[in-house]
Image 1: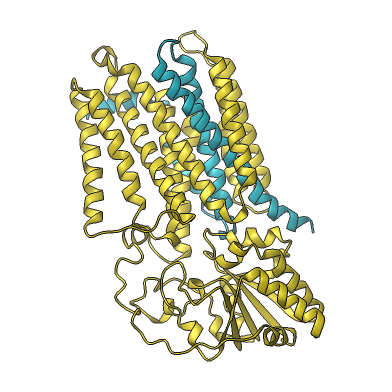
Image 2 (image 1 turned 30 degrees about the horizontal axis):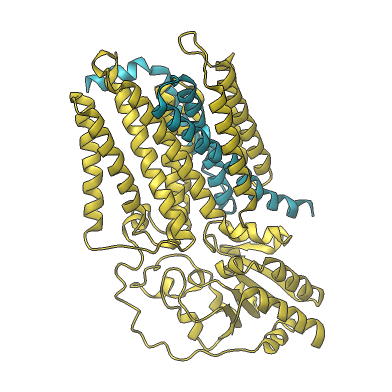
Length: 104
Length: 464
């Protein structure tokens, strides 16, 4: 238990961010028409692709002889990028269709 | 400089998500979030410093980005509108796997020297959390993907929930054990937790019915968000944290909203797997249904005052949205009032039908939401149901033993007549019979939605 508290104290700023982000996420989403559930889910899916940043850091810090880290990190970069790029493109394709109807 | 970029990234995620929840701004919101993401990625690559040292292995990083980018771009561009839900699930799984891999590598860095690291328990806990959640999300998403495209069937057996809970309990206990006692066999324990997490992800999704997959995907989506946030803690990285937690909480709310649209609780979706207890309603005598010919359908529709079209998954599978729009314009040209009644969970994802019909340029104001549509059925002459089933099943209102009991439905039986286009008499995704098809008002028009619609159009043009 003590370890948990000391960890939180050391990461106090981050803990604030976590708590505020939770409320923010709830607030931002609460009033969304059901039409947009799918694109919104897909958009959120793309946003959690930020893990890619972690993958880049892992990759960039791996030493040259550590093949396990290099290979896994490389894989992580690929997977993360697919998540980000694919996620945003799919979302855009879904929303494109709403748009075409609007201009008409 | 980099922290400034991360700040901008975080703000674009918030603004993007906010804009995504409004139809008018959604597309822009997506673009803004994507821009912020690109900025954050580029910033990390070129400006990241840890203890004064920059990153290396640029070759690997760039290659990875290019390979992943190309795969992501191509698969996202090529995927059919009907297969969108699977695609989203798969992308989500990739994100989960990415988070899990990061944890694995970071663990490998630490493994030999656990005792020498300050604050080791906190870090280890975060690494475990990221790995577990990421792995569950990855395995679950792959199963959800397989279920949506029909590769994997629903599998449930006696005591499955007990087994699932035990696996989860073992995962949690092992994690606590390792982080608290820092045993010498950490590597083996870490590996077993990883394997157990993957197994749990599989078992978690396997028994859940295909119709509930959107809810599951949305839930797994928020899991991946939390896994990404774990990475944020690990690297003291605010943008990963904001993005991850934002998706985690927004995804959870979205999941609950989706459940509400089906009038079910999340618990009910996760535990009350469809098809498990199907005692009532199966052996019931259904009587005969009547068929209607194409030409009769054409006549009935062409001379109606008001036609309501109820699209469902069948429309999506047959890619019949353009043919549908053609029929609608043709009928409108003859003075028939045509509207679409959209059930919030018609198709495989909420909003699926709206997206599909929007693709065919169906005007927005012709799409009625469920409440609106239900108020208009009693003034409707003909309801044309295109490949929808469970969302018009009156058992949801009348039969407490039905697995979909309590789900709000489109009350099409209030209309003067109902024409149901289906490929066969097979039950819908929830696997239950539909009394509607056997009511005297209802006639069946069998065939592929696209072909039937095209033939209807031809029939009206040529003979009427």
